[in-house]
Image (cartoon, rainbow, N blue to C red):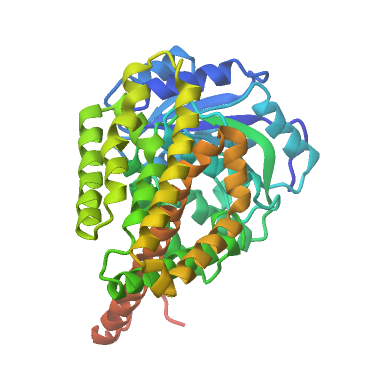
Length: 466
């Protein structure tokens, strides 16, 4: 039965070793225009000052016996909550001044609304390239998603408590952050519950992403289990990350790799040197910023090693014109981050970087033509056509990036986006194999298991037989 207004809100925040981020999260909640909400922090086996921070801000503090995972922590918090609406918030998320009021208004305005999700804003806390790119991609996906949502999101997602408890909350089979929110959303949709995506419900993300954490999350924590969930339920909604354009992009990237590999073999296996070179240049911004924030020597060594390998191949294939560009690239990438701490050269560096990329692409193309690769291998033309198709399919996202961070950021993001499509396809393949392997093993166990005939249950002596 729909709740009568006004509705009360309980905010549930699972936290594990989240001392620093939780401080900002709770501060934002306390500074919001709705201070009546109950705030519950579930300390999931933290070894830092997470509990002390929660107590400092007056939050209601719950503990798990040991680290049980965010699904368990959220379920614990929801069971203990007193609000009509439970707002799940990650510990590294900051609400806006009007967030809680907006959630309350949405539920009071629509008595049939069962759950509500928002999205990250376009101004994440961490300034490095990978974090900015990842956050902007998430924001774009949600901002272009259907208002009638196809799933749930626990980063900033509100749900009627009675509905949540009726469906047993999040699946606790996920011991680490994974797709427990997506799985819950699918169950809610199957039960004909109404979930809305409020495009104006925005929160700030504080997480600092690294390249490796991005890969681990997208493949192990999201991609593979999400694939298994899709195959289990037999549904694939045309929404968010599963839009048709994204599925087509994955297929095109795999086709591109197959064509490029075939062309490389036919041309002596090294046709793609100029294009690998361009990819390295487009990754310039990331490498430069990695060098300025953590382990600059390691970043420089890795980049130099990759460029040296490409330079060796270019020398082997008599593409000498590429070598000078490759030689100066590491110096160019790190110069601003090493010697321009106040950012005075930022604009100059960006303009020079864009010019450098354009000139390098021209040089790489000329080098390819000089080696007669493009002239004699028509498969290369198909590679260009596929790249063009990928650009058109994802043009709105690229324009979004350019509008938010500039053309140089967009150029640096394109290889990451192509890589995203590639490992999304890899995740699907692994998830597909895992699903059907598990199904095969279950069938084999059921066939080989002996048939047990249950014994007749005799009544107790005191029972009267009819």
